[in-house]
Every structure is written in C-alpha cells, then in structure tokens.
Amino acid sequence: MASEHEWVRQIRKRREQQWRQMNKIRERNLAGNRLESGSVPWYQASVKQPEENKAKRKPLQSFLNQWIIVMILFLATAAVYSLPSARTAPVKHWISRSLTEEFQFATVLDWYQKYAAGSPALLPAFSGNHQEKKEEQWTAPVAGRIALPFDEKRKGVVLVTPESAKVVAAGEGRVQFTGYKEGLGNTIIIQHANGTETWYGWLEDMKVKEKDWVQKGKEIGTVKKMENQSFFYFAIRKNKAFINPVSVIPFD
Image (cartoon, rainbow, N blue to C red):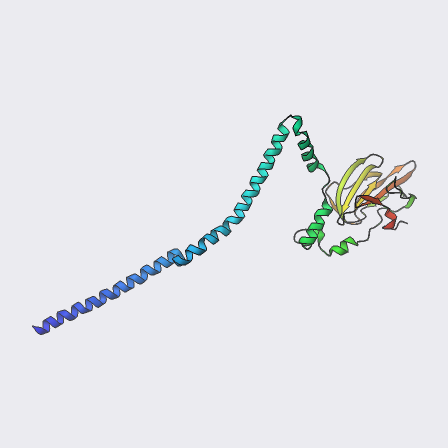
C-alpha cells in the first residue's frame, strides 16, 4: 500500500514539473511574438517612431507649402488683372515688368559659381574655374577693318567687311535678344558668363534665337550689304556701360 502511494506521488510530481516547463515555453513564445510585432521593444518604439515619421513628413510638408505659396501668388495675380480699378495699375505694371524685363543671367551665374562650386552635374556649361571664365579671351566676331571708331555717341565700332561675311559669337554665352533695333536693324545681343553683353548689328539674317546657348566662334548670322559695301556694327556693354571693343578684341 505504501509503495502504491509513493508511485502516485511521483507521478504527480512529474506532471507538475512538465506543467511548469510548458508554462515557461509558452511565456517565452508570447514574449517573442510581442517583440516581432513591434519590431523594437516598447520603450524604443515610443522614442524612435515619432522621429522617423517626422523625417518622412518633411519633404511632403515642404512641397505642400511651396504649392500653397504658388497658388496664392497665382490667384492674387489673377485677381489683380480681373479688377478694372485704376488703383491696381501700379501693381499690374510691376507684375508686367517683373515677367518681361531682362533676366539677370550673369547675377544668377555668379551666385551659382559661388555657392554651387561650378558643379557640372547641375550646369555643364559652367564647369571649370570661375576665374578662367572671367579672363577668357574674346574672338573677333567678323573679318574686316574698322571704318568708324568707338565714341560715346556711337557706343560701338563700325567695320567694313567682305560681302555677306559670316558673323560669329565673340564669346560663349546666352542669346539675350534677337530682333530689330532702331538704327541697328537686325540685332543680336549675347549675355556672357562674366556679365558682359556683346551686340551685333546690321545683320542680313540671324541664325540663332533668344535663349539659345552659343559657343565662342559659332556662326550667328551674316553681314548686310548697304550702299555697295558691307558694314557691321559691334559693341560691348559691361557693367551697364559701353566700352571700346578695340581694348579687348584685336581687329585686323
């Protein structure tokens, strides 16, 4: 009888041990599931998750802010032009001037080369050393000899050239203007990286258009024949003042 009671007691003891082991395994499994579902422990998730969400929201928030500003400006401009009142005339004039006046390309270029370090990935045409661009030598825009020298009234020089002579860009730059100018006829104005403008007048035809980018020596037009001779007008405008082209370009 005693041996039977001892046998029952041992069976109960083994069952209790097995039950405790099963409980431990179940607790470990539950803890593992909680960590996997949260990716990180609860005490880390409460700190990192807001920072990650904030970083993701920044580009979207910036885009939305820019879009809202653009829409406000657009609606405000439309409202101004829809009002016939004379009070809005100065505002209309300012908007029209801002949208139509010369784009200060050289100013933007100076900013670009100062802060973007002339990265060719952004603007390939500006790659290279900024100082070298400033010291770039001009090339004669046409073959010919000077007939009328520079003076304060003329603002440039007049050259006698062969008939239908080819006119080339004196330097690399952006075509700022193509069209008719009083006293100069068909005229091309090129704005260069150093802020200088070159003017080409009395042209027969123009082979470039506004906003074109031209390399130094690229053909941009031909000389017009006038009074049995071909004359060509050339001027250089630097810092809003015309200078003598002979001082920077050797003419034959």
